Image (cartoon, rainbow, N blue to C red; front, side, top):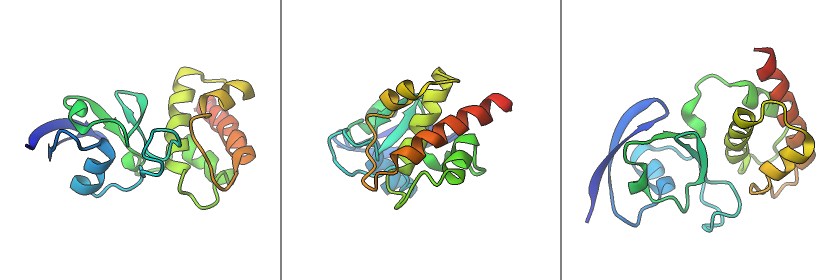
Length: 154
């Protein structure tokens, strides 16, 4: 049995008909055409499906859509203009195939919101739940450091 939920998605109030078993990633893709968060492992282990719900990173492949009722959801599509994190990822070539990049970008935003000047150990620990199959990890670490610098300057 489907029910309607309302939530804020990338700054806009939206509603969707959801089944109790549907995940947030499924609803974003099927109801809103947003494919930046991708289900890869289906177990919340790889970070490809990362979304921010009320400012906290969640695994969208595990997060039931009904739990988004009344919350604020941010996907990678939420910024029409690149922010400091996205700019840093481009400047440091912190991606190859790009499949994992949306998850890394959203996790980096949360990291820098909580730790504006993280050291390398903090970055590695914080991003340890995100996997890059292309092994762009050195560039990702450099991008996070650059994003932190950019944020501090603005």
